[in-house]
Image (cartoon, rainbow, N blue to C red; front, side, top):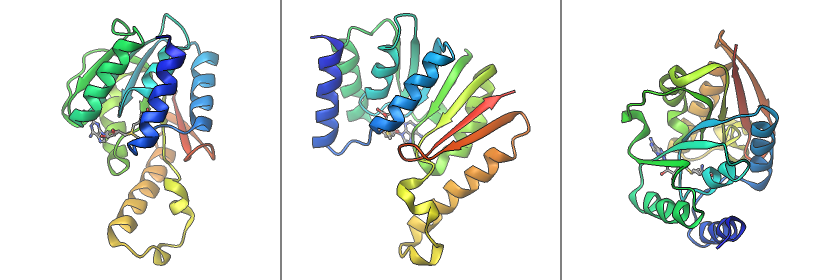
Length: 196
Ligand code: SAM
């Protein structure tokens, strides 16, 4: 099976099984960014079934990805998909809670796409593994448009708290003196933070 077919099948699987994967628009932006900046070594927080990891690797044979997933079923599906795509040598899948993973290496690019409420913790932990001049891209910054809604209009208390955390993370990013962050209204909202 060629990689294009594997990618197509993963998209269908994600749709049928309600697995959240990056939007088409978000993916296009991400892949363009990687290409323009000649990114080689990537850390991804939030593998799901390996869709974005395989798409990123598919850009260029020299790209390698380390990706972390805490959900066993999704991780096992990602293992299968990476094998089908023939990318076992280039994609390292880690089955763990990202906040408990110990990494030694440094990356050119970090893609944060896991639990929104923990974005700040992911940034604080993994930014230590980013090379100078590298980029951290965070997805879901718009939280399906909820960050633009008045808080009192959001009925669920849990949802309100989550929205507040996404907003706090936005503020946190703008205050990082070592990073320059730009927000893009693409897909579900992207934050691109470049380490100065
Ligand atoms: N990047 C994937 C793609 O576009 O194909 C989609 C990832 S999905 C939006 C988010 C994933 O992050 C979920 O599968 C979830 O289980 C995982 N996740 C959430 N919190 C995590 C954590 N603390 N550690 C590891 N994985 C986590």
